[in-house]
Image 1 (tube, rainbow, N blue to C red):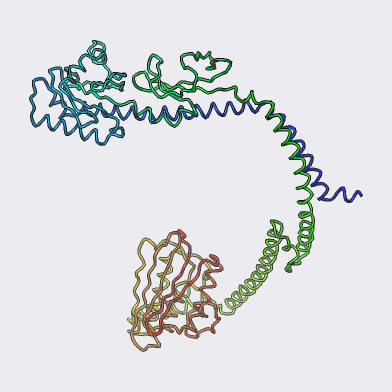
Image 2: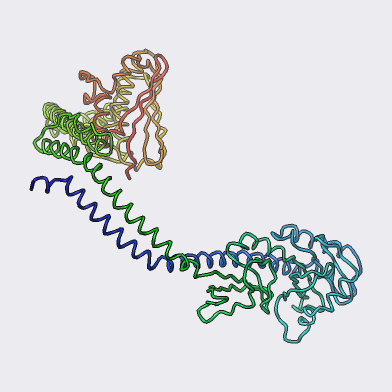
Length: 575
């Protein structure tokens, strides 16, 4: 009995039921007492978010309107055309074209009823707006309270805006009056007059009319936009300091967002006591949720525990065997067709990868040991060779044989580099110097047999590469590419950067490689060539690169028999 109480299945069922019962009870009581308040706060926040969004949108409209008026007023052609005593000339037509062009690019052009430039002498330049101009427009503007306000001595604003009856239709519009400054910065009785339909703002408010009760008011609090007929009279909603208004037994949250023109403001209201009326229904709903959660918790925990305990036990046994170096494949832990089965599949893949990695590590260790043994077997006392070759070089200098002296010098440089080891990383510049010494020796042996062309850019010469990477490739191009053809050939060395990878190409136009040999070129182990400098073939270079940089790097080879062979060296970019 005690064993069953300690089992995963029992603990899972007991802990799940306890958690479900505790969480459900606490959350339901919490929801019952605080859900109304939370929903109200969220609703008010959403209401204010929409209000702020609309405020930003309408202020953008107003910025576009005022920007249009200021652009027109500051235009030089408009300023010249509206000077006192100006007749209808080409300057007037040019000013009208400027007004039309400014109006065309304005985002709210489709709502502009009038756009007029005028002076107090009665000169009027009318843009192609929604309404046509009339000879009575200027006298009507001069009689507006908006115009009278601009004539006051203390007026120094760049524009003035107010709600005003339309000059033509009489409907309420947003009127803008902007002085046209002269060269002294004074208006001199010249103005830009605009009328913008309130439809611009009403269209933005229509989607929020019924659901969010957002509307537009003027500077005196009067409603100037559509208003839901089922809503309470806004004039009867008097909010307290917290923004709460009470009307006919209901509570409303009222918010205001002032706009940037004409004293206009956005208002919204929201009823905050709706949920309290449905408290009894909410309590019944929460009780049903509690009972249903407990029943579902019992059923689900019984079902889930039956499917979890057994696969977990199998996984535990398999992991214990892995700790004892048992890396065999176990199909039993993959039988479950769920996440535990996927974990079992991953464990099997991991054990196979570990087994493969151990085998590769062992092979790599043996291969490295063999290479070290071969290097030890081929070692010769370098100082004896250097001294002997140096003696030969001086004999050639004394006997005036510069060819022999140069060849011996190149051979000494090669031997010195070989004696220092082949695993060091050196700048590409030094690798090319070593390669040039080798080519100098081969040019003496194979007179007029091949031509070497170096096309590596100067900016890549400071990048680092493993020593003696290129020499075996050029040697292979000479012995197996150019020499078998019996004709003079060309060996070309080039390099390029592709993102963070350096690619060096050794190409020859020699005999090429048959497809069957090309397929095993980088994997086959060839016997050492007695004519080779160090017995290091293409496959050996490929293995050295992969041992140093990883499997993503090394050599790639492409060839066509009788045409060409190209060997590409792929190494990471290292400064």
